[in-house]
Picture 1 (cartoon, one colour):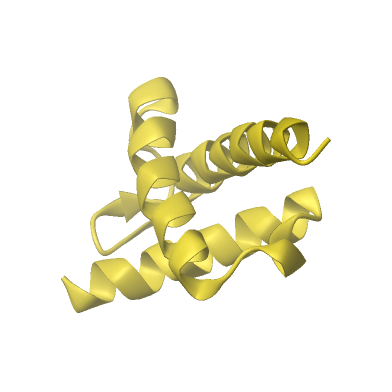
Picture 2: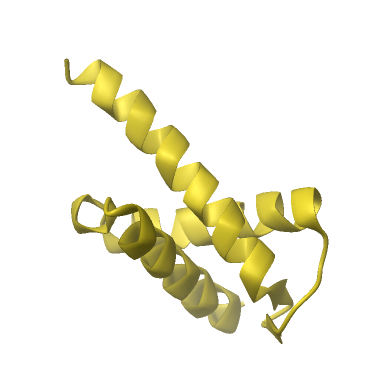
Length: 80
């Protein structure tokens, strides 16, 4: 369980860095984006590529990028 949380945080951190939204996200948001993004990415793209803690890394990062962009768009509209 702890290993999954750590890998989820790293996936969320990578997704935040790729999208440029990572500086606004906290540690908990990185973990949630990584775990939910991992689920979404594997549902959409399958389970291929290298695996860590039961998560396929490439689909997980793609899924986390999607989650970060959606959440950023929602919060951007609320702040306007």
